[in-house]
Length: 285
Ligand code: PRT
Ligand code: ZN
Image 1 (cartoon, rainbow, N blue to C red):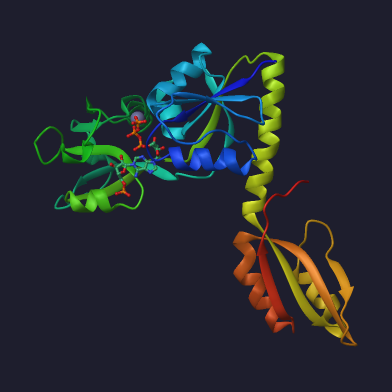
Image 2: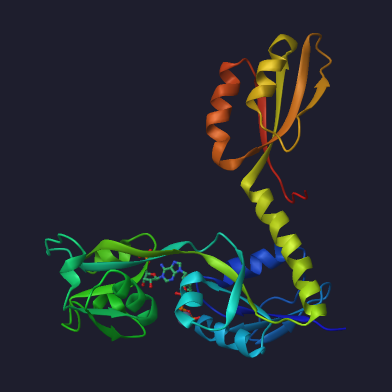
């Protein structure tokens, strides 16, 4: 029986969360060690641990069938592969930054300047789109020191908290793109591998959905039931159970994480009591 080969970053910012995602999908595999390739004991998958920059090429060539990389690496690679799912973790942005003492007045600042980056393709697309004429200095690491050593006038690099820029005397002035971890796949998977990928995707989506939602239980006097039910946009309609206390009901529903605090306030104001909010492990629609 064939197995789906998935490439994960061996060591770096994506590694831990990629492995966690597979584990949350119920996929078991021996952990740790210096192994470059490992199989799962309960899912038809084989895991290859690689440098993230090599993953697009390996997926394009079919050495791996799918992989988890940053969207930035996917777009920079210009390989013939496709995104099958955005995974929501390792969020960051690719930005332009300049020394903090520069009084930056707009994009035209970069005209006829040198920008250091590890993302020459993404930067050159961005400059073309904005009619900027720049010299791109390609370097593979420590981009943030390149203005200080006189290599460039500005940099184009990944930013997450912004503290690296700050500690190197730089300020972020333009955002080139947002990025997050994505699952990429080869363009033409064999039918049986495609079926395994569908199974994996089904599990990933159930895990993601569960993270975006919470299970909520609350008690309400029956005369407030109608009003409170209206506040709760559940998966379907909420479950209502009578409490032992006469005239009261218990109401169960699912709410989305981002509406959570607004809804809680509304519920309390409407008379809900004993509100419990519980994480959901898997959510199958
Ligand atoms: O060894 P390998 O080649 O596999 O790893 P790598 O060093 O090339 O990549 P790694 O592990 O640093 O990043 C993998 C992916 O994580 C990237 O392609 C991004 O999609 C994503 N990601 C998320 C980040 C960051 N956040 C991040 N903060 N990638 C890099 N950084 C670096 C950035 O380059 C800068 O040096 O962190 C610094 C900025 O961070 P802040 O928090 O100080 O702003
Ligand atoms: Zn890398």
